[in-house]
Image (cartoon, rainbow, N blue to C red; front, side, top):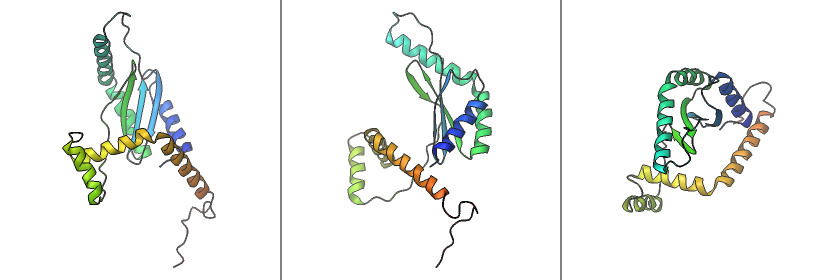
Length: 183
């Protein structure tokens, strides 16, 4: 987990490093232990007011594909610099005409041990056609929790940032040493 200050520095570095004409706006930068996801806003295609929803959807999809292909080299250059500097993979996405599209991104494996009642939940999701595997079922559960507990998770993340700031001000902060084990 990174602090707000570290996130702001990362966002600032990206804002300074990204070519001026890449995005209309740097919409979102998300960071975890493995990955930095950069999402920028690009202009929606100019269409007549009376076009069908299908035509509008296809135009936005085409704009996103065109952007992805045209900017690949610039995005790769920025990603290489960022991956070296921040020691995380960089993934890209865009917002266009109210749609969000992620390009290649990290799918990190997570090991866990589950007891039978928990495995039965996953197996029920598989049997019901919600997921193809226990891995898919677990990912579905995480997305469901995320959707319904966003406020709580935000508060928890803010509390963790506070704990990190307090730890950084501890007695060993200036020396840079870790606390000594007294056993």
